[in-house]
Length: 624
Image 1 (spheres, helix red, strand yellow):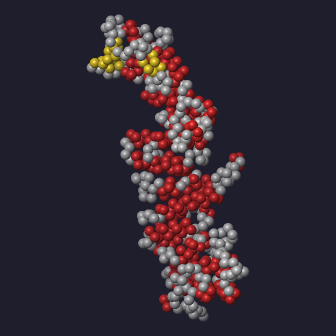
Image 2 (cartoon, helix red, strand yellow):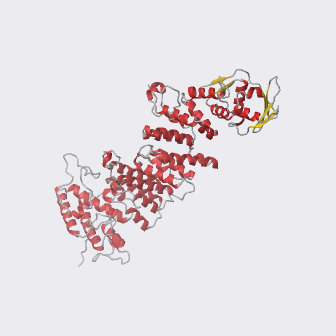
Image 3 (cartoon, one colour):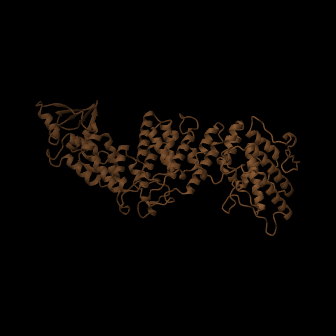
């Protein structure tokens, strides 16, 4: 910081009962009252330099005069600087008191017209030649103008300091040789040949909101948007406390913090990625606690949603309980709103004039899958909350489009976690939850877990078992051609799919020719037994949620009996598939399809007398 010393006499001011006097052989003939302080001074030293005092003293011809100067800017401190200059007392000028001295000297009219080499001319020389040429000095001067905003603005000091700061920010990095504050972890100034591009952000973060905004508006059109975002991030770290400290803040502090947060949100550049998603989610947490305007919260969620693929699970989980006054599980609504903003931006076509491809604009299919993985991971965690309503879970899970989940293993984990934590939910809620699951998109491990999962509805277990039976048969008998409606129910058996066919050891066949023949015959019987109307692609609702008819259930049950008999001989059943019989399963599904009428297949004896492990031989009774 630059300093200038004026005067050489020692300071001989002393105070007695709120009266400031100066040690001098000549008695005082001028009394000046400034606020609560009385000054006993001398005309012969003050009048030659102060034009205002000349005017006031000429209007009254008495020898001892008393003048009230309550309007002097900077009060006693500014007035005393001017008095000491008139007496030749030594004073030190710097960026911390230059504003007070200039404003007070202009008020007292200490100009060159009154006397050559007057106080204003010396202050202006120091201000222009030293203060404005440095880096930190104009910033400190700007901070001191807060106490005298009108005088500083009218005298041009505020504007000149802002111009000086903006000019240095826009300077070439190789020319930055002045001292600046930079405390980023891992930064070693000696190891860098030139200053980092955001070298200025920490120093200007000390300014109040109006001054910071004016500096930023001067440079934002000439610097990249991410650099503007970094300046806002540093400013937020300086002026916004942690979430835990907000609750202990006073009402005045909360009002100021709310103003800072709304200002930061309004200044975030439009281009995506100007600020990090983690920073936006931190602003969202603080906004919920500070009670900012609905516009600010909506704007934060919109910006965070556009770049949701960059978010982390930890950031999303930190939203929980961010607003004590909000309703329970409101953070799930925030996540859903951000997801909706992401999907709107994802589905919006790229503008041709931008010349950017879909991948360059961040709208690739991988970004959608990544967001889907993030949302599912979030749901796995929140599903462990014992108080979470199933409607909240389903609402967020179904917001994701189908293409965001090429594999439903994470969705199965969500359902399993929720059922494990909520064992007392109703049967209808359990079915509604499981309707989201598409068994065709489960991996082998997930299927093996599902068929042994006692928490799942029986209908879901049957779907998994049926698809596993048919898939296992196809893996053995690749030459068997199934009907198109059955193939539609199966996952694609390609090299890229997650359900690849396991290979037998080299030199060994999977099964003998005899078993292969039985599997082929059983496959044909299964194909013939299923009617053209059953499980057609057109009649199936998304994720296989449509209920089968009575006729379809009976025919699927017959087909499964044949498959069971073949599997019991060839011993290729999926692990865990022996917990229920096909007839018991058929009866259960029929009861779900027609719970009121309790219709049973013609010719089938009661299920209670025919229940056995799947794969055991049962006499098949045919209806007339």
